[in-house]
Length: 342
Ligand SMILES: *Cc1c(COP(=O)(O)O)cnc(C)c1O
Figure (tube, rainbow, N blue to C red):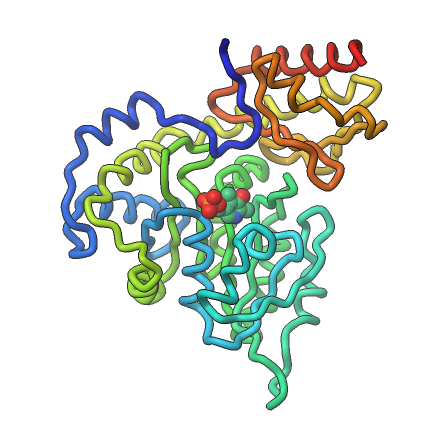
């Protein structure tokens, strides 16, 4: 049976072109700086987000935590969204690796309020921690994007206080597509940006952390400290190059499919789709009657559709390159029959 996997965009499989590039990749020991494929990926990644340099890291979590380690001093405070990946999904790493404490703001559906961030910056005082970094997330895991004007406004505030900004841009190219701008326009208002090759871009492994030359040089040592110095990493970097060259424009297809999926689900009586969080390739919804949640996941699996179970009362369906328009129609049909049979 064919399986349609809409749990995430991390489930995307590498393309035949990626496998071929991996097979043929010229490699060397990257800890010695000898791997030409990694060097090319790092150059290309920096160019894509308009930064001086970039470094290849094993995962997005690694890239974010390396950014924290590189920007901050132990005991610093980092301002971050209460509902961000760094806050919720990185197993408390910021306290372990960078030794910082997090001070959170509450975004509205992933939209940060510049004034609220400004209010959280600490004054100089012997009692206070130093605000060492501001972290933003765009696209946001709640399925929304922040416009360039808001990014610019927060950048101005941060600049005036001498505080760097790190962007968790795991899905920055989705954000760029949703905003109709180049990713550089978003990254411009940050000092460092992390983005994932292994999500919608379909590379098997890896993320990039980009910033100034000086920042990336410092991060290179931090990566070694964290155990992320990888040897013939060109094998996986080769797929990352294909991801950056070929896979960015097609992300918009995932967004169109997500909207199609949202419309189909919304037309079913028992479902409420969160339409104000439909900016990228994610559809969030809930069952109006929570009793319907009981066997939904196992029912869908029997239909050949993999979904995550309900979290905080919400489901999240994620479109990706291995999910076609007709797969989306099939998913809608199956959800409809679920309601007919209960
Ligand atoms: C996926 C993701 C990451 C990184 O995840 P890894 O699984 O560690 O690669 C970071 N931030 C956001 C917002 C993400 O969605």
